[in-house]
Image (cartoon, rainbow, N blue to C red):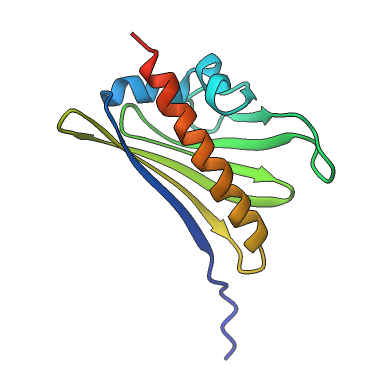
Length: 141
């Protein structure tokens, strides 16, 4: 018998932010706030909602990420399918209250072994995006 399963890689970034989960949640789920730290979008926090992130096109990429909302647990967990360059992954944010703030865990799962460059690019991009998420949350009342 041949094993046809393929191991995938998951990118995980964790950061404690000095803000309550409600603030982080707003920055994760309100389209104008998402645009301030990630990309232009037509996001709505509704399971099954298909939406796009849009950025400046570049060689070999039209600047569009096709997505679909998979999980919405207010102030706790948000997940969506992320399809860019024909590479489909799942992005999940988990918010856990801590003393004086929130632990934010971002996972992007589903990178196949041959997608090392994409995995590395995602790691670079998400470091920047998560810093932007913290900046946007800090500016919220």
